[in-house]
Length: 149
Image (cartoon, rainbow, N blue to C red; front, side, top):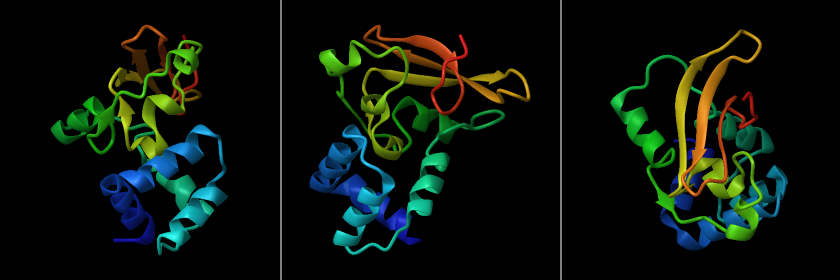
């Protein structure tokens, strides 16, 4: 297992570490802050590792979803959810925001839903349906969360 995978696994099992990661993510801190936090916990990762992990954290899958992928999609990439709804922040959202999925999609909000909606064009690539059960948004977009409709 590489250092980034090990760091993610530790974060999944360490609520204090996840809280620190969430704090950094919610504040819009850069990957350099995540790298420093990881180093403080004995992991040697790079900003490039963070970028790659972000791309792999469910930021788009093509084709049919298998049973494991469907289960992951129902409850975050690692199957963990929590009520991340904040009426002040989320009530203003018109698309997916940090509170919806957390760091690297490790902890999805209980109210967040996404599902594969097919391929539109070569320019847009894959399409996903993003929906907030609290009524904040419901749209078709690209894997990075941008709106198409």
